[in-house]
Amino acid sequence: MNTDETISNYSFAQGVQMLEKMVTRNGPIFTLDQILSTAEYKDLSSSQIRNRISKLAKSGWIKILKRGVYMATRSLYSGSISPYGIAAALVQPMAISHWSAVAHHGFTTQNPVMTQATTTRKVKTPEMRNGQAYAPRGRATWRVNEMEFEFIYTQPDHFWGFDKIWIGEWCQINITDRERTALDLIISTEIFGGVGAAIEILEDALPELDTKKLIDYAIRYNVGSVIKRLGWILERLNTDPIILSPLKRYKVEGLILLDSSGIKNNKSNNQWNIIDNLKEG
Image 1 (cartoon, helix red, strand yellow):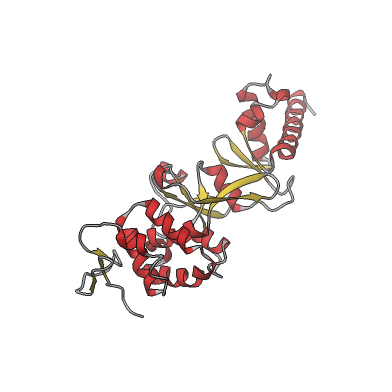
Image 2 (cartoon, helix red, strand yellow):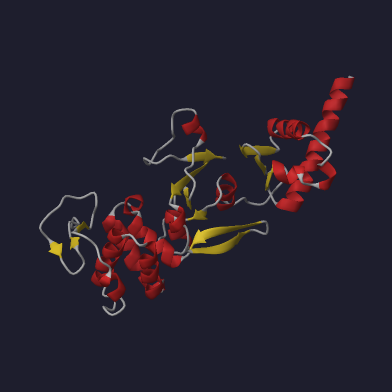
């Protein structure tokens, strides 16, 4: 073995040792900043660390999730790595939401084909940066480790309504709570297959919800179309009219299509300022 090979092998062994320490301390997903802030590596330059990382990636010991964020592979970490943890590593701030939260809370028996999360950041996936988004469902999707992730933008003052859950022993993440997940059914009906599908999910979920909290969330969200659609739907699902009073009192201008993608008709409900254009069946 020549001198160059000896140095290279030593460098790789040092990289594996570094990786083992990171996984022990931080779990299977860790960052360049975490390495650089570790006392024994403070004397190494970022280029030296990146060199070790590059060798580990080429050897299949880690996957590079994005610049400065890495994930150990099964050759070192034998436990399962939750897609929720990967989503949290890809984008911050974020909260697992929409179909992923619907499944988590048991509102559906379907297994989502992707992980969905809400964020206040306008995310650019690697494909988008290269000029062509991967969008199998009409929305840009980030592909990592044979998994798909959709990050759904919301403005900062709408980013609330979370539970915190642990992913194994190494990662705590936000996930929309039951009532915020239910509200998202009405906010983003297109993600759930339309108003009719959203109503079906909400009807099944309703016994598990704090309806007053859901209504408080709608008022806090402060978007008239969401408030009136939710009120109309809850009334149709036989919710106590007294509880619905805050939704009914909320002032809006004009009439709102129940299905924003549907065709306007003459079936108006003036109590809710709603045009019932929902297709039957």
